[in-house]
Length: 100
Length: 520
Image (cartoon, rainbow over all chains, first blue to last red; front, side, top):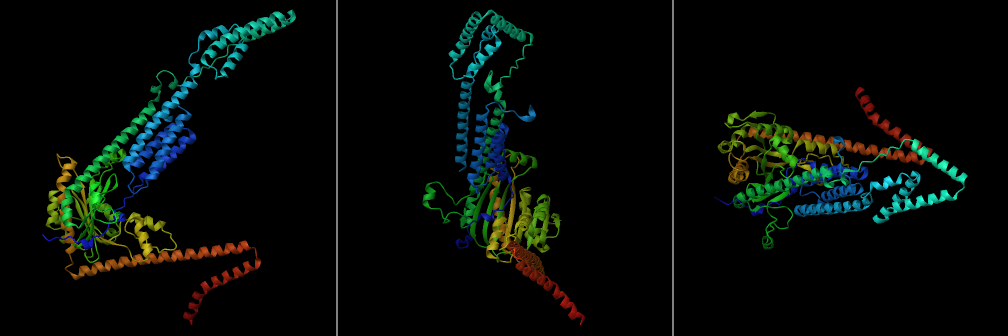
């Protein structure tokens, strides 16, 4: 079998060649995380803060390597600070509105 | 980077627990004075004027800084002293005053005794301050459990995908290194050869490249008759609980997609697709080239292929040559493995993306070339080059499903079959590279089709350019008008209006002139 390798014909990899699949989930999750964090901080709603942490986690899990890590981390930090601040203001247990 | 983020997250959780316990301590201290109240104290107070006792208790409540002991002793002490002073006051006064005072006092007491005892609304003590305080936080416990379970699923799913990718890479590494000069490139290192340092540090960057937790790519290049081969391992998003549930419901599979790029001379000009029915429908609808060049979908029964396959072909001659015995044997051996084969010299990506680009591209300085291959980067390239040609790629795309066979796990199945898949793809790539039309008519037909599409594209481009130029002209006029209106100079305004009138007359006049010439 002849060797078909040709070092002369080597081309470098370009990330643009990967088939783009429209996946907006991580962006939506980051946005949701930020919105819920702000709601919990402004309106002092505890379950919003927990949902914000969850949204940040889902966004992190679905993110691509090319995405900026700073955005994911900032979303995490914001949601955790929302939880901490909401509980510092009012340490009473959480009440879910439609269940009580 | 991902490990550091997860460690960071765990540390933050620990910090949260510390903060929580600190907050609890603070509350313990704040509410301590309400812990030990004796009921006897309340009983002893009732004979004395209730007004005075209420005042005294209020003063105590307003001074929370006092210690516990003081708080306990003070009520009894102060009340007794007040009683004695009150008695002394009554003795010293005149009889009338005494009587008055006594009457008033009695009146006051009568009032108080006759009036119904006010209902004391005892506020409910919050659940977290009575009994076992942790039990009241059941919602929080549930949330934490949900978060932990998601995190555990993330770690397990990520490691499973990573192991699968490593298996695929290790199984076909030898074969690929024999066939290609360069195997594994992330596009970022300066040289493509791994240095000794890299090997020593166990960090080989020219390797399988992780795009996300569920997408791994391997780049191969340096071979006759083709420019490059990109192997995309698209796994189910096991790292996300929701996505893995959705994959179960929609019955999605792990996929491995080989994309081979040819140079202009390596490949004949045709568009062809062999796909499973569900993929054939999607591809025909979504892919630019398949919708432009292939008019209908035909069943593949003529070619004796088992399974539910359909063919989209520009030239019928091509289908017979591409679907040879090798393809038939492969499909028979691995019934559900082959998802689709897409061969095209006019590959420009998916329709939806291009539509979005067309609607959103309103860049005034660049031309309206929006038919890029993938995403925004290709259009930017096109705009930079300022060409009025469509950026097409010559590709062979083969997609396989990774399905675990009857009794084996996915890992073991993949290990055994992946080499066969790679060999099949390489054989097909060589076959396509060597194929040339036998009849001139086919060649002429394909060239005509391409010319037609090119003309349509150029028309669109011209139209968009004209629209943009017109928009620019209108904006200029508006800006001029605003300037002149703002200047408040009636002469200037008149002059500008006259100019505009003349311009409009000129626009209408040519038609009139032509009419006159014709009539003459």
